[in-house]
Length: 269
Figure 1 (cartoon, rainbow, N blue to C red):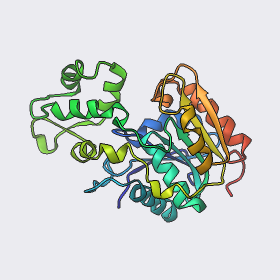
Figure 2: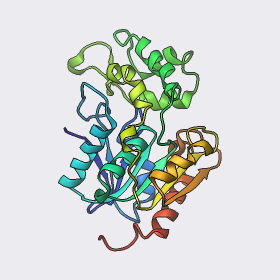
Figure 3: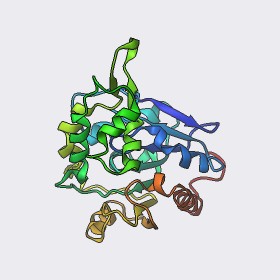
């Protein structure tokens, strides 16, 4: 499977960033540039997102295995950072391929299943209802989505994935595989229970948004069972999109963890 990547910095990447649902690797650009003095990064477009390949089904183990193949073919073991859906991919990667994960940073998601799709079902419905044949540009799409997705920041995040159709064809297209992701929201919101008897013993930082409920005390037992060497950082004023809402605090928190654990800042291992 081909995964599109963007390199930030020079030299062998030592940080791998994985985005959330309906996102793309470049969502992590600001944080990766903020950490560049400690090491270079690779921003990954996960399957069915950005410029990576589309698939016929959604599977966290398959996505994690694709990232594992990317690491084995290039940079080798790295610190893996993942947000939301990408955080679940990062967790599964650490549990299935621990030799490839020098450290793990999970941003605002837990190793559990959400019965309501984390609220993304309403977003998926709104995006599916948008008539892309009649949409001329992102401004027009933004106006169409305003009633169903009132948060301008969320709309802006989603509309980064809207592209003009090729060859001068009228209308727009989504870069992500909206049809599949909408159908598979139960899987996106789920967790592969077959991994619940495994554990990853490397250093882990959990980053939670203060205004988000994706990480709560009821999930701590599962987090600690699977990832016993876990520290928790709550970012003040942040909702679910922690790194875009509070980039400076996110960079500071990640930098402190990476330096304290000796994961970055020294010679390449």
